[in-house]
Length: 415
Image 1 (tube, rainbow, N blue to C red):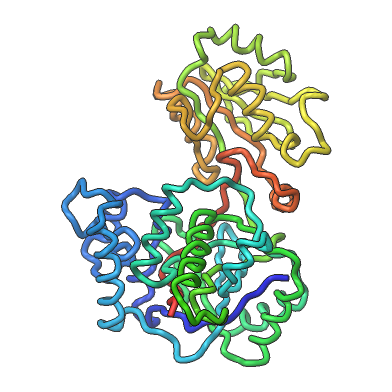
Image 2 (image 1 turned 180 degrees about the vertical axis):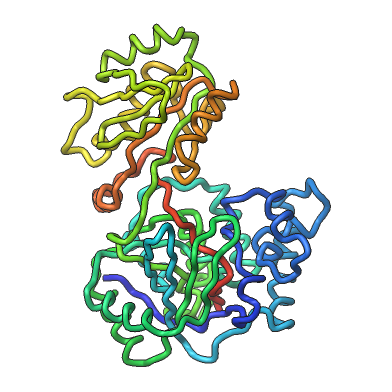
């Protein structure tokens, strides 16, 4: 059963929220963060991308950079740009993209639930990335940014959220860059807090949608602090980390597409012929073509779009991994024909999130940078949950959730 608790959020006063809030640390590089924070001393980038306070070219992994994050976090609080709530609360965070709104509950999840598998993952994590986030959590003694969870649909929580959403939000703004609306409500009523805690206690699992490295790092730091405290009791704040939890059915997963630099020495004709072994290949013409169903792919090659439909027998409907289009395309196109064996390390392939549209695939091929593009039908939340429940791991670069969480709306201190 999932253990959660309310917490004393550290957050910006209403008049500062649009100056403080930012994109997550891992969706932009140092140069972009430097540009977005230019002229804004209140930007959260000074805490989550503090290399921008050093000369250009300074590594984000420089020990001085981590120290600067803690220095800036302290300074933000001293200047009143971030203020801690007096009592423990839950928060409702709403995101609106293209007319669709999804509502998340900002909670503290238990580190032990991650270790025990109550918080389920579907991606592998890399130790170097875990260590980077662990250093950031350690030096700030806080979860500056939340992780992104999904939970099984729940009518009681849905009604409670709608009650608050009918009222005036604490924050309400349109974010730059993405142009999406972000709102936040504060839940301080003791009865409502108890209802939320009890409803989560009845859930067999929570699912990481985005933020596998942040989840792993938070759990590892929590375990460290347990060992370092000879008087550890189990109710200390460091036993918890911050997450925004959304009802699974509300989430939007976009396609996560591939662009490839070469055809492994094949001509276009030889490549198309090789595809015929496992796919029904149909020329669609010059107009952008988007796959309409599971197991259908669209390919852009030599100025033309093609439909590729995986033939019966090339996938296993009873295998939660083998039925995925990311697995089918990886096995039968990228590996078997193009000999791209490791999607994480190969420099012959790149990935394009669906928000950029299929026009971005066409642009990168037409420019000569890439030779071929492959568009996939999006993975479903049910597929992700089935894989997580089975204990298996999804292939790399399989999911693209949108909109991304904004950072800086709420922060969780570990003590």
